[in-house]
Image (cartoon, rainbow, N blue to C red; front, side):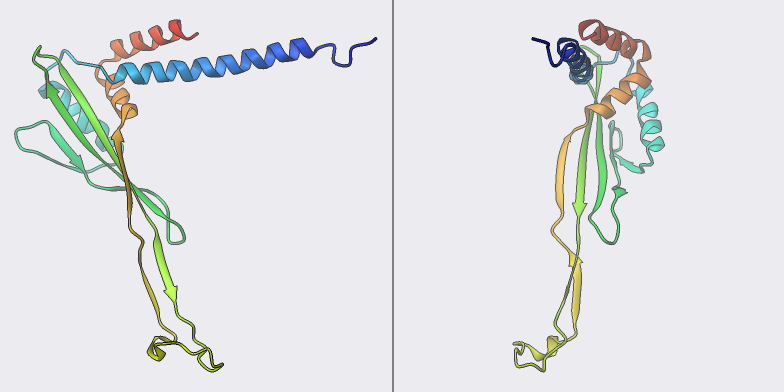
Length: 183
């Protein structure tokens, strides 16, 4: 009997290779992100901090700094939305810490905020007996904001950007290690 799909095993092999390649890419990215969470720098904070501010400036953020400390908090930066839908904005808290062994870590805490504009209009027809409890409300409307939703988390993508800018050799070595581990 003749086989209906003679190339089915080849097709299945091709799909498997494509899926595994995609999985390896995700595993590689996750590996790099996870390792970024443990990055420590040899340079002093005084040397790194101006670069941190340059990166945040390039992203369009303005910020406040704590005097005599390596902590900056950005202002909210709108990242989307409009009059018909929810608006979203983001802010960061960046902190530089010197560990007991003299190495330095940079931590980025990101907070995302979403707000939805709401409006309510009252019926304008009071003549068909349905009546409203408050006859003064006829033809009125009100607007406002729904309660905002916030989510905060450590932003390893931004920390990876810091690492790539502040220690390009270390970042290249990490990416090579990840590529060797997840080809």
